[in-house]
Length: 197
Image (cartoon, rainbow, N blue to C red; front, side, top):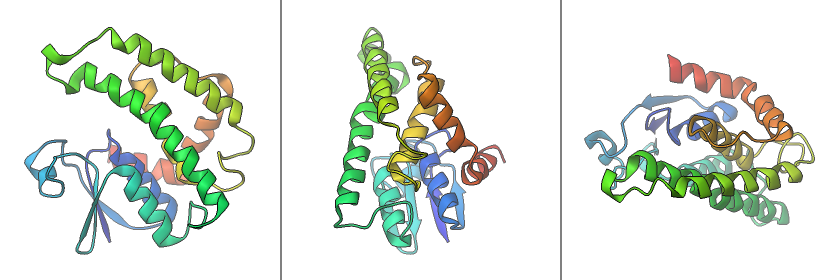
């Protein structure tokens, strides 16, 4: 059984949702970032981490990719053009969604107050809105990569949810309805239930 290290109001939720989609049992250790408990699994204190037997893995996207490859689901096979396209979408989401939201978080509550530049958040919100519109334009099927849910779908929806909590501009109706449909998936609902349970 896997153990997810990290609170559910963090990127650990991505890993939880992934495990639910895969139908894999796991326990949750809700260690806070930079806590002594988190440092047992990652010297930097960053979350999430995943314990798989004797192995401890870090970084939400690395964990998700590992789980997808290990279980042969939610991913195109490695070494295929489809996987290269999936990876391109994943990296784009990290650059254009995740990094922008993380920069805003750092200037809101992560950095010491004297190091924050609150004025930067307006430009980050504009950048996120531009990227969200581009993603909306790319939507063609039920999922980002076609007819099957993959890692980029989970990543994108998690970032859209994060943007709501961060009071970023609302994504357009098309992207909003797409994200809503994924939040209605049984695996997402199950992960949320663990969050609230």
